[in-house]
Length: 281
Image (tube, rainbow, N blue to C red):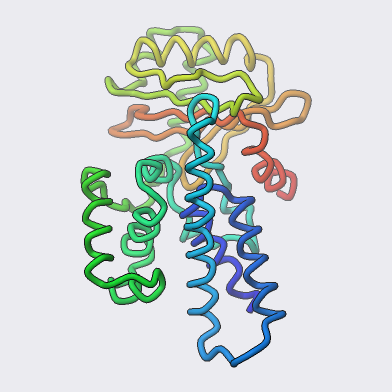
């Protein structure tokens, strides 16, 4: 039964956007299964999958209510799947940019979309897992696709390390004009401090605003600090350390060799899992 933990955690994390909460949900479901009394369950995998997914949907609903009072922008909790051995299926974790996009959906829309597009469930299987009709499953998926403007689940794009190297070279050169040339015209920078770390309250949109913010943040806080390149949810990322402590995770989405989105995760609560993973390398 424990062999199902990585798959179950992947389901819960993709729906929730919180790795720590996903692990708790899976642990609770597995313990309840172990301590369960009564009729024998014929298909343990199906039962556990259904239990975890529905519990994740309920948790997601509670999380979305809490987000209304969240200080500033809310970003998903990032993970580094290659270091999360035993807890996650690397191939099943959605890209960070897609996780952010899915924030537009409500919990059930998100679950249906993920099951259909990422895990290749058919509508009959989704209906059984979520205890809804097949017709309702189709309608929920249609609404989700419309909200996302029919954005498909994309295969993970391999981003060359040269991109991050070039970015770091430009940042260190203190040449803001060169930085502007790395950004797409519709670039957006989002920063999440959770009220516990300094962060921009609103997204920075456009080349001028984005470049000034990125430039100022680096030169004011991180110019002489340790910066490590890596991957987060299959997207390229930079990890910033001060006195050996991870204080910022900067995640990039490139399109047509230009930076399209930049996400600063500074809320220390959302860096706990990354810190543990980095320490276990």
